[in-house]
Amino acid sequence: MNNIKFNNKNNDLPSATKNLFEKRFLDFQKLLLSRFAAIRGLFFRRFWGNRHLIKTGLIFILSLSFIFAQSKKFDAVSHDKTNFPLTGKHRTTACSECHPKGIMQGTPSDCEACHWYRKQDDRYRLQLGIHCADCHTPFDWKKIKPGSWEHTRDAGFPLQGVHKFVDCFQCHQGGVFSGQTSECFDCHEKDYNKTDDPGHVQQQFPTDCQICHNMVTWEGAVYNHFAFLLQGMHKTAACNACHQNNVYEGTPSECVDCHLTEYNQTGNPNHMQAGYSTDCEKCHGNNALDWHGATFNHNRFWPIRGAHRGLDCNDCHAQGYVITGQCVDCHLDDYNNTKNPNHRQAGFHTQCEICHPPESLSWSQANFDHRFPIFSGDHSHISCSDCHESANYYEFSCINCHEHNKNAMDNEHNSVGGYSYNSQACYSCHPTGQE
Image 1 (cartoon, one colour):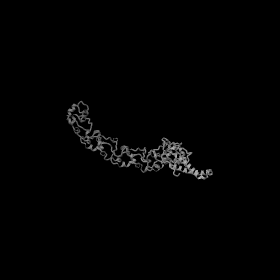
Image 2 (cartoon, one colour):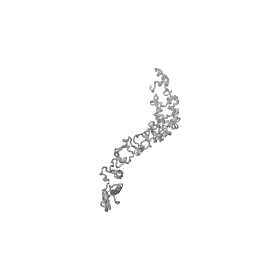
Image 3 (cartoon, helix red, strand yellow):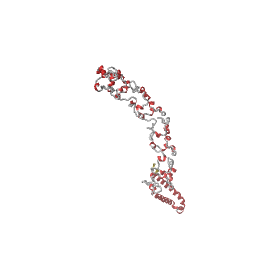
Image 4 (cartoon, helix red, strand yellow):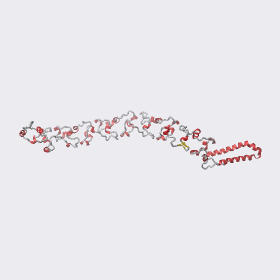
């Protein structure tokens, strides 16, 4: 009997089950011996002389019957003919896992009867449901039926970013699933409180993490800097460049509040001496990447035209930027040194634009309204001094060139009222030089 072997081919029962049958066979032998005592009297009286032979024969016959019954092996394929076919991991599970102490009759077929009421191996303790088959299959606990359970639909919180990979109990501490909120702060209060760059608690940042952070990492937060739009260099500046000592509340938004030092130290042009506006945006704009390339609208103060367009700022602002804007402030030397005509002696106006148009590229492009025609006819070839003998250009002489005889002119103008023999009288009657 000790040499009984079980079939180890495919679909055979596991080794634990085979050991169970061997044990049952030995128990059966003991049962036969105990039952033999009850019937021994009957055989003893009739076959006293052959009692040992009878005992041995009876045990041999019954043992052969048991062995013959075991030759019809009970395997996974055989189990498929019952009301509980073995599928998935049940096919390789030891019989004793479902049939404790070898008890076959009355074994339940509902998942939860084994996996909770008997074994209690549901880590969630039925909080996610009491019927395993609603979501799970016998092949793997982690492979649930498609659409059977979704965290977004059934829990009201979509698992995005790192939330996809964290263990359930990391959010549901203590195995508590009911009554959980979806607010970031409920899980991340410690992260919020210990953050010091910037200090979330000190600056009273909102507790809704999603306003600044994504769900992948805490780094790379994007804060909606709505109170002061971050443009140009401000986009890449570190927070503490403006919010020193992590003080965020009450930070002013005026340029000069941060850039007063740059304003005071600028020497070309000297902003402080010139009285430039402290609103940096007026010249440097919002999108500037450095202090260079400022676009100052000079036309708001004095339009730059003609020869002034190619000048350097210092050509006019050598002594500072607070100037009147009058021509003579820059061109007094040009005025005094001009000899043809001599502006100073002639008492010409110091507002150059009266004769020199703003678009002129040189002084020779003067456009003086002489009134008396000197650019054509007989007077086009004479110089100014031919008529203007003195430095005062308001004085001129006609009779010195034309050499009129006074007596002859008096007789000729005898009938002309208001006649006088002088140049001013000549011009009043002959403004174009015609008789």
